[in-house]
Image (cartoon, protein in one colour):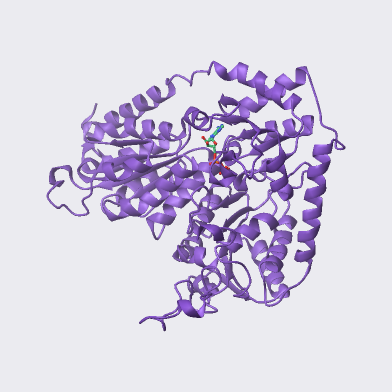
Length: 573
Ligand code: ADP
């Protein structure tokens, strides 16, 4: 090699950036600072778009949602110490939701660790409880291999968060161009030669049993979780529902895998469906609190569960009648094939199907009667109806709907319609508030052909409201609708006997400044802000902002006495 090519010109930051690009990473979310500023620009130079946030927490939520939407790990970049701690929010949220994420953090100088270095923290220990895999590069040559390994681990088995630590001294080490290229090539090779996951013995037997149970069931139900959405199982599940006539019930983020408008949707008859089904095929959903642990009184005590999950421990934990470990798309395709050989189909006049559709139709009619009224000052229903109709009018590709808040999310889940998979993002398994703006940014870059519409409570919005600046900076097509009811659950709801003591004149812990001008925060950065209090004002703001496909905040004033404390979770507060 000539002198020029033999010079050690590639530092750890450049090597990490190139390795990320070589691994297929297209976006990275984070906040720069010591020691990772150069890593962000090197990665961008190598073709990885860096989305610079105002706080690592939002960047982490963005990376988590990106993993769900794309099936590739969302990459989060954080600075050492406090930046890493803020990043734990996204890392833990991804793992809790079974979404793939790779957090890469700079850390303090290895030689100075233990004696009070700048932003020193044992980040390996700090990230361990929240990650599937934690690795640390102790020398520059480790970087490509560990990056490829952590990216692969994030998507293997049950997806989740992984962590790569790169100390600042390692980021500053150098090697030659040819050494860098060889290390990246070797890392890519070993990742490509990883043996594909072994086929589980139980698969064929499980598929046969599942088809048989479904065929003999009197009241079967398909439950669709966000794991099925993640697995892109929509075609297979749609086919299963259509050929067998079995009603289906999506979890909140399973909505859209089969369109909400499908006649066999049991969403509006949820209690009846889970309370009376005798066989439930649960695809990519955990029988956790969201599904009442699969137990009475919500479920019948005799219900037989068929669980399809990529994670063997999940199946061992729940002890279903039939457990099938495998990818949701693949397993449902196999079940479809099994059924094709010996087909069956519940007629629409089948008592079970009729019971579900009748109950669902009745409930929909009741809700529509509520929705039809124009209530001013706004309750939750009236603006949600107007927003639903505006979103439906967009047609296909449908907007991604981001939803958080107590009442805003609960009522929104019932009113807003998802007809395409992976078009709903909400607080998820952990009920995490503050995810909305990060989700919006991730959705806008992951799905550039879709509009992004966030429907947020004022409290949820406030967690990360500064990211409206990020929306404007990147000119993302995101419309954030804030349901402003003066606070958490609607401001001050204390009874007089709660308002005593030396701080009785303080605002209630649940209240915010009344009629806050959230739309002006967006205007401060050059985006569009709208303040709306009537149906006409809301319709006009939606129509203009949807058409513009530019960052906007619509501040919707809601009657503070509308809605319930803790939304529908009052029993837990
Ligand atoms: P929901 O909140 O919609 O009920 P959960 O997050 O509780 O969904 O469950 C999702 C489940 O999907 C997890 O148990 C996860 O292991 C599983 N999963 C993830 N990817 C796949 C896949 N490709 N195939 C099948 N199951 C999957």
